[in-house]
Image 1 (cartoon, rainbow, N blue to C red):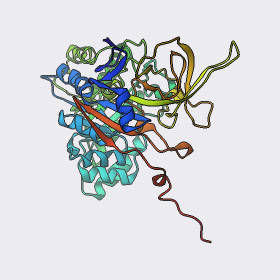
Image 2: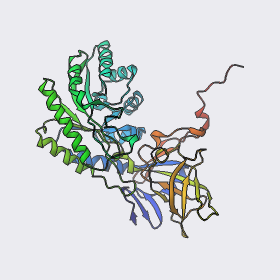
Image 3: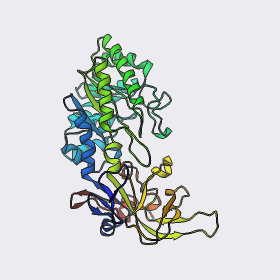
Image 4: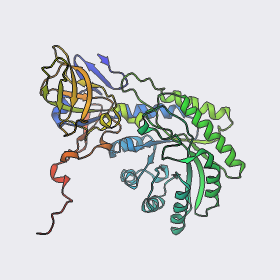
Length: 427
């Protein structure tokens, strides 16, 4: 047996790729492809790493559900006592649909609508992470109209470079997110002056797929500088939200473990005299990314006769199923579900979508033929949540493994569903 890097519960056993002890080839043939398959054990293990590191400290671990918002995934984390970081009214509705408490929800996002604010106020969310002074004014008006005081935490942009892809960098001064560090104290004073708001905390989030500790420590130091200034103005800060963004291993990355990250941040809080504060954090990718795979069938192979030409392995999954490679030029592992004997050729693994950018992996050494099943690894985060129906392609089914059980947690879409809400013009 060989364990694949960065993928707990996933291993090659006598040439067969297994997740939680179940053969992925058999799952692909049973449920069809494309198919997302998740490991409940891997999700629980990832969350437990944070929770163990935070034991004995006042804290709330809020799963950033934009990474994967399937109801069964949310159920796994709710059962572990987690809260949720949401960025839309739709995500709020999902959390409430599983019976989780709104009192463990933090509502983030740079563009909350008035309707979403009312929805969250009526549900009783724990906190709004506010990203501009203009948003403070709108939220104040909506809270007063409902006879409430909205709990707010200001998301501060600390201008810290997390060293990630520019599309997932969120903590630099040129990013759209948060209130500029130099404007934060004035924003807190403004928030404290509004009768419909109640200041409860401070928040930052500097990016995604972060693989170093230093950016987190730098951001925390800048947050604590502000906490001290704000409290000197007579405005108490009850919690510090350090955000999320911890990376996972896709190929050769070596991000810190969750317990290493938390130990370093808690030590910094202690060093600076802030150990009494409640700690909130919002991991997403690091809880689900390596808990999932995308299974796909090889439709045809298209080898080149040119010595410098490309060999194409055309599969039934595409950029509408998994957009990360096309959107971020992301490298994701691709492995055969059953190891095939014979020479390996170098293939570009591509989908059927009518775009040259429709690829899942380039220059992969594989021994493949039509009918084989491949697994795209580390696909538990930002797979289904970013999927689309481009080319009128139904979205994939999803399965959750729980020991010897395989539970279908989302039906495969049918084509008729895709245009059920459309209307022809009058004739």
